Each structure stands twice: as structure tokens, then as C-alpha cells.
Length: 137
Image 1 (tube, rainbow, N blue to C red):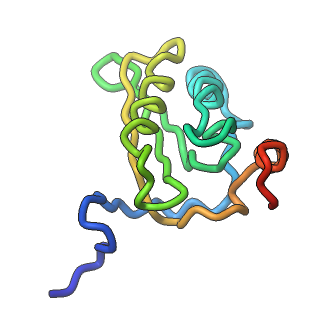
Image 2: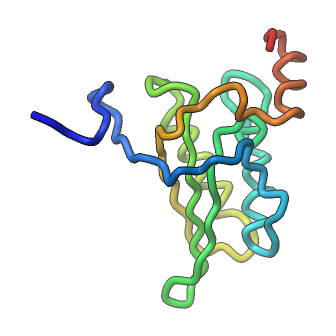
């Protein structure tokens, strides 16, 4: 049986990314509601260390669109590894943060595994936070 989708982890719903190439994603060029979503995401910290999920490089994209006269935000993200035990909690926290941004009526989170997360996706501020936390990077 052949498949184009990865199957390394039976409980993981793999969705391939959209070919994002510039990392880290920070939302620095965003405006309006999209900017407010990015700002809300900066408030979400990794549950194992005090670092923003944005600075950690887990957020790959934020899209805001009007659907049936409502503003919907879609956050595309990854995790540091597929077996992350905090997967559900992080997705819920990120969905909640995006939905809490002023002007957003609903939000969803897309979890992708491509491109694979690496330390190069961490912002300089994130690297400083990781060093302060005691990690050597």
C-alpha cells in the first residue's frame, strides 16, 4: 500500500504544509485583525518552558478572512515533535488566543508537519529565552 502522506505516528493526523520557506514567522508585517491575532499568539507559552509559541517558531501562518460576514482566523502551526504530549492543550490555547483577538469571531488551528520544526525557526528573542531557561543553543 502506497501513500503520499507520512504515517510515522498512528494517532497523528498529518497535514502537509504549504511550502512556507521564510522562518521564523513573527507577523511583523501584518496589520489590522491579523496583527492582533499575532499579538495574542505571543501570549501563549510552551507548557514546558517560559517561551512564546511564536518565538519558539511553532506558528507557520495566520490567515484572517471574512466568511458569511464573520471574521475567521486560521492559525497554521507545528510542534517540536510529533509525539508532543501537550498537543491538545497547545492547540486549544492557540485557538483560544486567536479567537480572543479583537475583531475575530471564530478561529481554528491547522497542525502541519512540513516543514519539520528545527532550532533555526526560533527567533533571536526565543533563543535568548531558551538560554535563560538553561538550554544550550
